[in-house]
Figure (tube, rainbow, N blue to C red):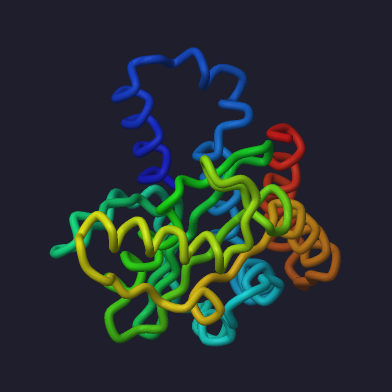
Length: 230
């Protein structure tokens, strides 16, 4: 938790404008993402984060779900780069295990859009840094697809990836390969995460009252974060 908070403070210092962080940074995706995924990191893995992963649509995440107890959750981990393509992007959350790599791109609860080459770029970076592992780009959206892409309106995820691939290829004067969206892009919504966490908290049980109460309190921070940032 300390590392995630420190990164937020570093970002605030770099921006030089604290006003938008007043009242808890309402509506800011980095604040919401940190609050929600920090809680998911602390909660019992299979019951909570595992259920969120299991409920995602798009690319299959069974390998991630199977490895969920061994996944390291890293919030705002810093930029990933590609050595040959001059690509750079920061995951909102990075999840690593020996078998899997997940690049999480979290959008605002309110209306937002993707850059024209964003999905393709993030897929390339996920594949590069995933190496031989099962690499996935997981989108956290405000609403189910289609997604809004700057300058191109509403697009299916597959079309947004193809658009980005074309733009990146044109910049480099050659074809640049991008993983298939159907195999490497999964998505869920903030509302789905909230409903999954609430359901998991309701069904969770532990004979130790103090442990049960601690889990309940942490789960409530997720639903509360989603409520106040809406």
